[in-house]
Amino acid sequence: MEEIMKLYNKDLQIARLEEVRDVYLFCCFTGYAYQDVLNLTKDNIISGIDSEKWIVKNREKNDNPERVPLLPLALEIIDKYKSHPYCEVFGRLLPVNSNARFNGYLKEVAVICGIKKHLTTHTARHTFATTVTLEHDVPLETVSQMLGHRSIRTTQLYAKITQRKISNNMKELKNRLFDGGKNFRQDPT
Image (cartoon, rainbow, N blue to C red; front, side, top):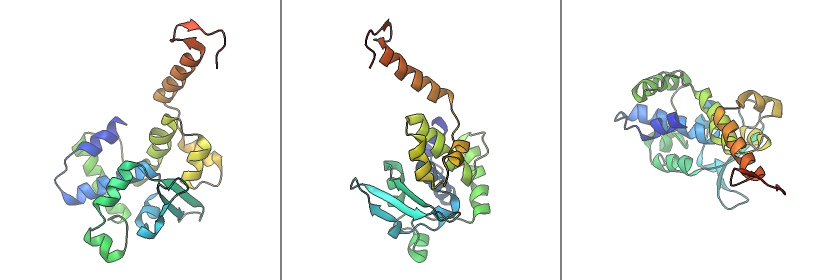
């Protein structure tokens, strides 16, 4: 999450790098793969069962539905590019470069932001699965549905159990079992 915040807060001052950073962050907060983001249009945004905005689209790779409620950061990025010339001319939601160019520019962004990981369009999908959702206690089954996976086994390949997740789970357990985190509760609920 620290690296996501580095990306988000960095003033890049170069439009092509800012656009790539924003699309990458959008992918981090929606789980959408490169090909799916490339083809998003305004028609993919609906009002969901909760009256919030969702993106609904079938995956290009397997035609499985992906239904993702939009988090505020993703909505912010969509709003930022609603009048972008590329988006208006091609009817797209976001200005997305070719995959090779996107990944090349993303390497530049990583260097500028001091991120040593090899960022690609696909690492954003893993970030969504692990850092954004699972570390914040979104159930694996829910993540699997949002990623448009046919099998939860596929989602398990994305889902790394991180030290933060273990820590969060154990803090929650400690609070449930021990009064104030110290004395064992006689009736833990």
